[in-house]
Amino acid sequence: MSSESGTGEKALFFVLGAFVGAATALLLAPRSGEETRRYLASKARERADYISKQGRDIADKASAYVGKGKGFIEQQRDQVAAAFEAGKQAYKEEKEKAKS
Image 1 (tube, one colour):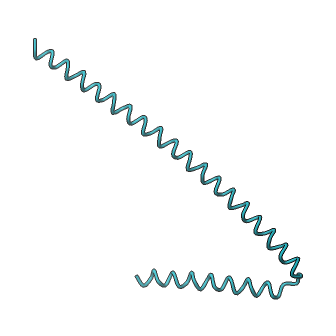
Image 2 (image 1 turned 90 degrees about the horizontal axis):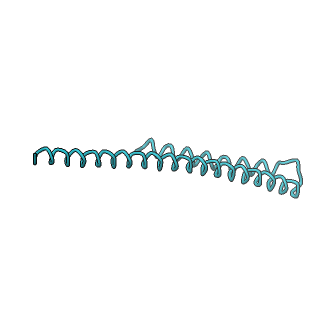
Image 3 (image 1 turned 30 degrees about the vertical axis):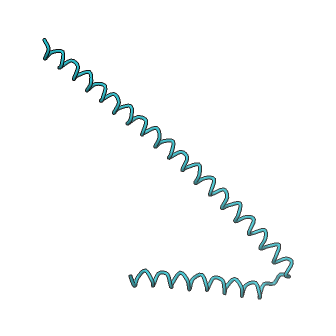
């Protein structure tokens, strides 16, 4: 348990450090406020586009896996049905043999 809390603390300190670093960089940036805002907005749009693309890629892959899974299930269902029918036929044949 202690290693889990240590990992959480490290992550928290990392995030806090990142925010402090970002704030310091903004304060000491050689650009004006308007330029910095445009730059940040541009980078935010780039990241949003990238994340959106990644989301679409993940959705496409998930859809492909679901399709493969459905195909596998249908194949297994068909095999079980065929085995069941073969068993019924064998039972009928043995029943007819027993009557004779």
